[in-house]
Image (cartoon, rainbow, N blue to C red):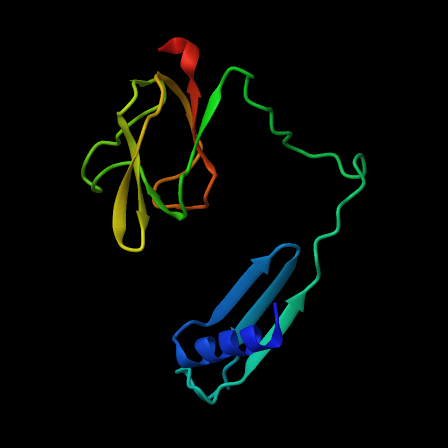
Length: 158
């Protein structure tokens, strides 16, 4: 990230009600945080900002740290249904409505699986193949990334 971009981000944080901003690009992280004086409870443009460059993550040797909870890979025949966009994941059309799908529900192509809100638009995510939902991988109202797995599907149980 170049200096001009960093200065622009600092300006945006100064002019907004955002207390802190963290950006990760490739293997670098930049955090911009507002600091306030003790007698001033409301953030102002005159509050000082701190730019904290964080070190890039360092890969550990393969057998250096044993994991407490090893993730088991899904069986080879399971299919991951992935998010086609960045947004907020919703299991139901409204808080009072039942979820579109539950674990063990058999789905077919065209069935609505969830909603992803992106830029104030609700996008229905539909099944592309039939099968049985084996696992929900995302909690309701959680932000999701492009390509992030949302569900595990067993296509042999259609």
